[in-house]
Amino acid sequence: MNITVNIDVMMARRKISAGELSERIGITPANLSILKNNKAKAIRFSTLEALCRELNCQPGDLLAFDDN
Image (cartoon, rainbow, N blue to C red; front, side):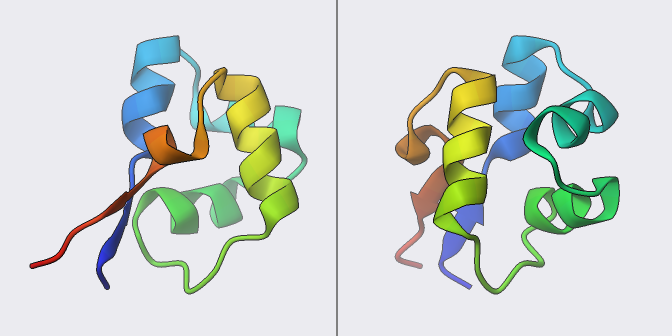
């Protein structure tokens, strides 16, 4: 997949645990793990919005396109 998810990078910068973030945005820790580990095939805009709100970032901070 050419899209890389950098949620773990933003979580480290904001010093927030996966359990706390999943609780704040209303998804299961398992689903957050799937997103963090680049195993997801899609992401809902509502989830992306919640991640950006809680991590105080832009979608481009969480998602990156790799042309290789």
